[in-house]
Length: 120
Image (tube, rainbow, N blue to C red; front, side, top):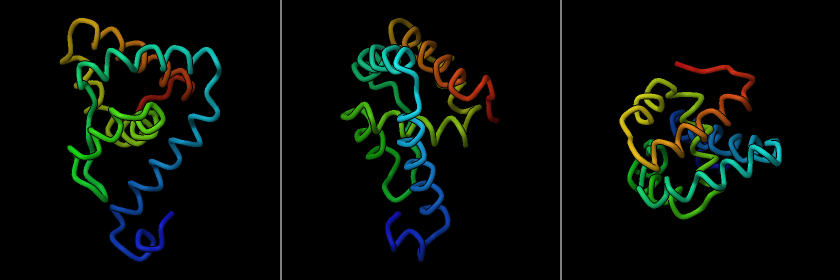
């Protein structure tokens, strides 16, 4: 965690902490879950169907960042899954076609990685 985050706004610190925990969470995914997530990332990326959360940078910049890198998509997803579960589920429900199918797989894999626990 960066020094400025520790001494700055709590919002920035919490966002960075949860994002970095997302990288740790990624390292604990099963090989099968990782394969599912990697395969689903491409249709999500093509559709631009990710959510952005403003912390440190604006929400649109965070969207672009995760669309470029699979690992950053997973880290941001951890943050969103744990802090904005309702928003994430509404986002998935709003989609159609390949992006919706991919998100259904991603959400199921993430829920499974949390032992079925979902957050509000």
